[in-house]
Length: 211
Image (cartoon, rainbow, N blue to C red; front, side, top):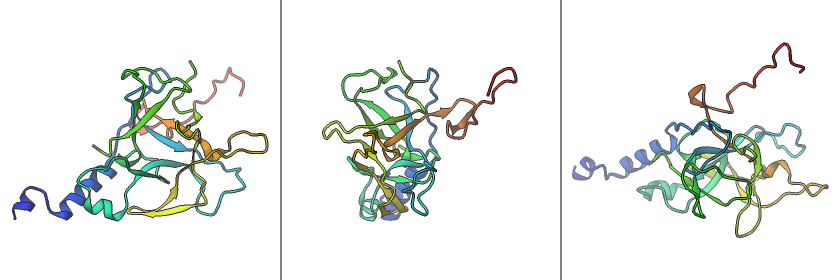
């Protein structure tokens, strides 16, 4: 009875952690087209309909998400650090696929991030080129390998079937990175506080403009 009153029962801990991981998160709206330290964003691996390597069931955009196995879900009081990641089909921002951009070299909160600048990803867990909503390559500092979703390897987590995320640079015949290595940092939709830039329609050209 005392554990239940204090919220210490196992089922209460699991429900609280799961509620935090799946609760809706509002992403930061980029007012200047840049991503800043302290922004809350999603990392999206865009769909590539022309890819000949797409396997049945793995088409569509994927987002980076924290991944907890069942043991962690039933034993953790809060998110373990560091924790694993996987790629999920949901493109709606929730606790487990929303991240805070962290400075690792003294950048101030609110300062724009430049290409080539180091940064960290912190998960809330519910708890002069533009970067925002543009395709980019994310490189691991220590190995110099790029973050990727092969899309032909999957793993089973507490939340079901998800796709493996690795650090590996995939190069095509022209020595350019393949689509598996491309990510978009997705920000909030300024015209819809609960939406993201994924759901914002592209502006239609004016009649006096050439298409």
